[in-house]
Structure formats: C-alpha cells, structure tokens
Length: 299
Ligand SMILES: Nc1ncnc2c1ncn2[C@@H]1O[C@H](COP(=O)(O)OP(=O)(O)OP(=O)(O)O)[C@@H](O)[C@H]1O
Image (cartoon, rainbow, N blue to C red; front, side, top):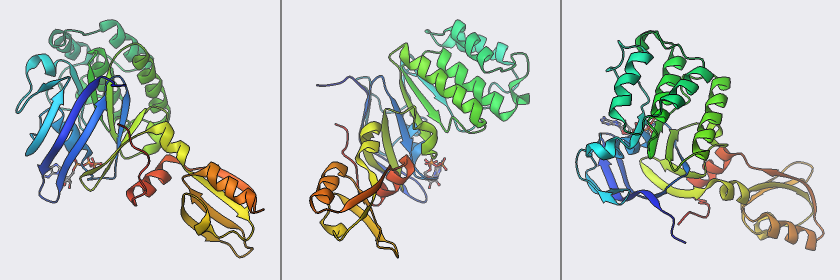
C-alpha cells in the first residue's frame, strides 16, 4: 500500500569542507516520528537545514508534500514547517515568551494558543522573563512549545533534549506523544542519543560520515537482534544469522544473531542448551548497522 509521503529526497548532496553530505535518498512517510541518528558530524543538522532550504543542496531533488522547490521555500510552505535549532536564534532574545508568541501567532495560520498555554504550564516555563534570561532548559522548553503550537505539518527538531534534565525530557516525550495522537504531523528528530528517542520514534534513519545508511522501522529493527548464550558443541558459524560470537573459558558460547527463531531451532535440534537470550539495545544495533549489517529497510 502506498503511504502518503511528507518529504522525498532524491540524491541530495552538499559539499562541506571536511566531508561530502550525501547523496541522500530518503522517503519520509507522513504522520510518523522519524529519528535521525548518528554521531557528531555525521550530517544530521545539515540534513535538517536542507529540508528547510536554510542550506541549499549542491545537487539532487527535494520534494515537500508533492512540491519541488530549488531555493528559498515559499511562505505558505515555511508556515507549515516548524524548526527547533540546536542553538536558539537571536531574533527573540530581548522578548518575553508572552511577547514572542504574539508574533508567532500572527505568522502561523494554524497557531494554537490553547496548546501553547497548556504546554508552558505543564512544563513550568516562566512567561514574563526575557528569553535571553531563561535557563537553557527553560528556553528549550519554550522553543519546543512554540514549535508545537504552530501546528506544523512537518516539525524538525535538532537535538531537542539538549539542556533538558532527564525528567523534563520524559515529560516532553509525553507531550510529543499526545501531540502526535491528535494530528497528521510528521516529526523528524535529529539526535546522537538513541536511547532518548527509543520510545518515541516509529522509524530510524541512520546517518554515518555524511551518508544515510537507510531507514528502518524501529520495532522491526529491535525485533531482529538477540544475544544468545548456549552450552554445547555446535559451532557458531553454523547457526543462522550469527554476526558475532565468542566462547568463554568454561565453554559457554555467546552469539549475536539476527534470526533468533531459526538459531534456537538449530540449537535445539543438535541438543545444545540455550541458557539465556537477551534483546539488544538500540545503540548496539546501530553499531552493527554501521558495521554493515543493515536491518530490513523501509519501502
Ligand atoms: N556551515 C558549515 N560550513 C562548513 N562545514 C560545515 C558547516 N556545517 C557543518 N559542516 C560540516 O559538515 C559535517 C556535518 O555536520 P552536521 O552539523 O550536519 O553534523 P551533525 O550530525 O548534526 O553533528 P552534531 O551531532 O555534532 O550536531 C561536519 O563535518 C561539519 O564540520
């Protein structure tokens, strides 16, 4: 079945001094949360910036909701794209939250003041302090509340958890979930902390050294990988889906497999005893993905 597409990238690339970003081919489905994961400098911010044409690609094609644009985006489209940058902009620094959102309410046709009020209250952000005087975390909460209140069709968040304490981030994740339940927004979250988006993301895009290693469904990614310990004489190489193995001094064998049910079957058939099975953490899976063991990809 064809799902509606929010953004499509075809061979998009950008030359940077130290590395080339791309060419990136990606199809972002509409109405989901997509985590863009990757180490520092892997190209996440550049990708988000190209999605708003703040950074113009050197080559390739980007299509937003079926429209192609080369160069700055038209106002009607910019009004549908929300962005929270890694560093807050300067324009609103001297304003209080109260004052700043009056401008935003004017600029965004779908502005939802009720939602803004509710988010600010729930996250306990002061409204009468100049934005420049806010703590890093308060400022970040304001930026995210204001981005959500614009009710964008596409929301781009660059390291949204930075500056937030773990509790605040947990509250924020709940807010994102509530928000997603009520609409058709597509959210792209760029982060290097896999754990933080684990509960939030529907899909994962992995960036590495400027390249996109593809996009996969989070649940299926986590589902494929298991660490298994067994006792017996079966050689790890003969077990389905094994990507890593070791044997300790007592003869206990540890394998990591992407095909756990077949592996288990094989072990049982040859009377080897499985002692323990563990799911891999997301960042462990990402390390294997980077090493070339790509999961089954979306599309
Ligand atoms: N404005 C710029 N001019 C020149 N090079 C840049 C610019 N912005 C980024 N780069 C380079 O492009 C590469 C990708 O950077 P980018 O900021 O997109 O990565 P990132 O994944 O967002 O990293 P981080 O997690 O550190 O924010 C890096 O090598 C960086 O040095």
